[in-house]
Image (cartoon, rainbow over all chains, first blue to last red):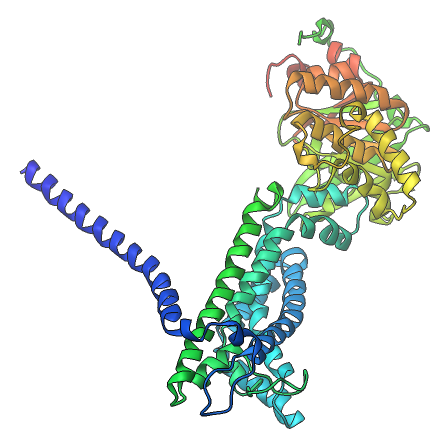
Length: 284
Length: 273
């Protein structure tokens, strides 16, 4: 009887181990499959022209996505300029100043904001920026993505600041530093590597957002005329090209997908390296 | 380290005139009727004390007796803890410490903590921090003050060539001396030390005790310690706390050789606590 049970246990154990092992392999394989698939289909369009030329008029082959790459850069820059300061300072308030009850409320609101679907944020940006200004713009796109960055920026800041030992705050206060001075000259610098990498991960997260850009930054096939004019972006370009009838545009879309994914992965890896190499105090 | 013979009580039940210490007009810090509460829990009961300038005053007592809490009321560090209340009088040179601007209090009454807490900055920037926050910008003044403070903290010769290295690279004892240097840089009138040696080995402890002796003429030192020998070696006056009350406060020699209260005697002879 005892032998029977132990054999059954061993079988169950072996099955569970191989199942979870298999799933782990699937997880890893998915990423490489996507990367490989994008590269396989887009490689013929991945050349210097892709990064330096404008899209060709419909029907002609060749051309590139220089305008979309620059456009994505501008939209993400704006998003960072809007989302990071607001989220960071709110996070500082949450971690260093707010009372328990208000912190609970604030955290709840931030989590709700984080749950708002990106397309809804796009509609709001459309309603408050695009409609009154009567045209689509880079700014509207940047604002939509910036709002999307705020909740993660708040929570990242809060968590990294809370991880800083209280003894550092007391040390600064005991020297006659004000609360604000303590926070910004001791606590924030101690957490800086975590904060920077957290913000980078946040940026990488919104870099691929398409829905809010569809009716804010819109997209076009030429160089954007400025911050208040529409601009092409990589995700929207992928969307437009993928649903276009021409085979050549599909290849371009694959290539754009590969570039976007590579960019996001690079930001991710850089952020993780910064965390790993951060000062010991930030990890303590 | 050998237990000094001196801590054996030779006599008991001799009336001790603690009032004379209290009444001294020379006192740097005067504490009258001090009560302190964490929420509804009263942690300190009617503390009266006068702390003499340029002397070392030690507080001893079992864990939770209120000695650290008392220390932290003297630079109003307890205000950072929510839901606390302080009643009574705390005078620094006859100025009411409780109504003074709190940053000003903490500049004048420095503090060194149980666990060394160097900022994640260079050795130099750690010592210069207090000067920066107090608005001193002149480079030469800061450099002089950093060197002087590190010398007082007996650390200068060890770090003078590595001032730009991160403070975290120092040993535990060096870090605590750095924290003392950092506190000394703003030239505090009183220096509070909350069990500064409890995490250090005997050699590092000895170094800190020696430097405290050396800086007695610069500032007034108040030290909380769990180590009775340390109090006996260092302090001019010693206060014994028990359950939030100051049981006895007197010359260190009297406290250890001839304590006026039964509780003090029991504690210093190791019968409890």
